[in-house]
Image (cartoon, rainbow, N blue to C red; front, side, top):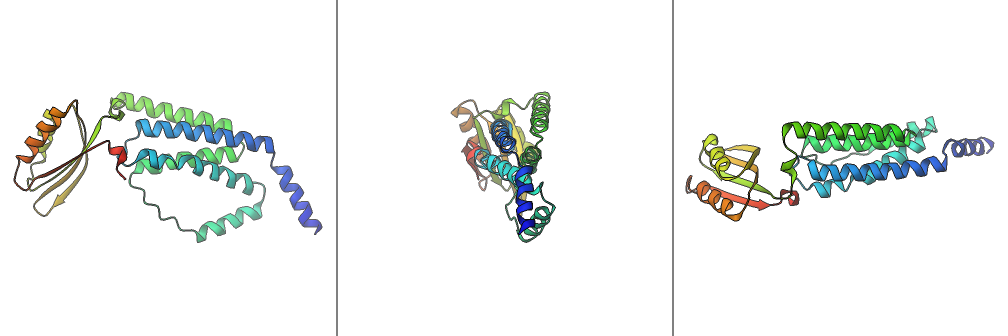
Length: 225
């Protein structure tokens, strides 16, 4: 009983409530900023708003776990045992999603270890470098809200011809996925159109490739799960 009371006293002394409160605020702010950046500049065509809504709870949970286990070796070993039982089956559709999840976990780890300043500096530097990289590539404009998800299924195997048709019609074209069918191609593009006339022109040109060609155009690929 004496050892248990001594353990509780050591545990309470190891966690300073003021620091814990500051860490929670820091994680909340950093993950919120990261969420805004990911929605605005992310490359994934999945639902970025829905996916990034997990950033804050993941960061806060990571911070809470590290705050608790850092004060006790026994708790650390218990955590390892618990995680060996848990199986995470969430599908990661894009490597970029995994990268941002690791960044969120890193923020939680830094704050949980009372290194909130390090987390702030690191995330600021990382996001700044990512933004500069996108400016160099000229891709920051691409993330505005006038994108189209274009899916083409055709028996025509001339990829260059299809790319040429889309490039002559839309002012932005990016091939995101290519699947080879038994006698043709299934293509997924992200495009940007200025008006409905451009979409009509693209529809006519693509469907004219063959009778078996089908075209699907969806506004706002952020809504795609």
